[in-house]
Length: 186
Image 1 (cartoon, helix red, strand yellow):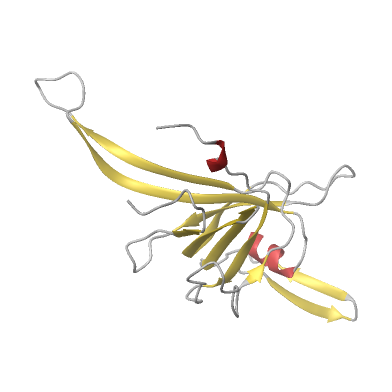
Image 2: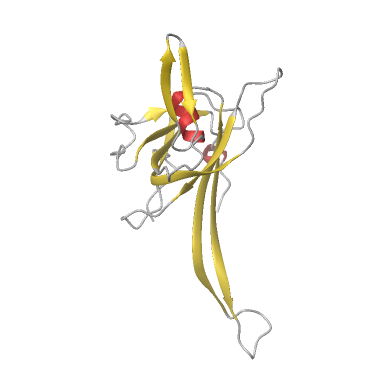
């Protein structure tokens, strides 16, 4: 197979969208993110980290020192990102079950519960490289890891978090749409 520099992609920019679980996602690259989808805004310049991993279990045999087979026992997909816009949408995603209320004119209160409930959402990731657009849609996901919030003079207040994808009623854990000309069905 020949090397082709035209097939090298970069995530030049993009967005993370969230919506209530069950919200209809775009089915192509031209449809806008519809009602219910909210853009989280600016993310740190680290971008988004997509991780996909599988767990296996070795099947060993008396006659072999190495495994004779591996059985797939698990699949995990996560998106890691850091929100740098501190607003209701990002704060209530970082703190599950938190609610924002206005206590008086110009004063708002984020109530962070001691015992949050599960907070599954639909998650969308869109990124571009020139004319190439990609969308990754997770119909069921949840923030499962939160790193520390740092308050410092030298940088934005950031909300670092990781979303875990869960299997849905469809056989997919996620759907990746792309108009990349290098992608062709096998």
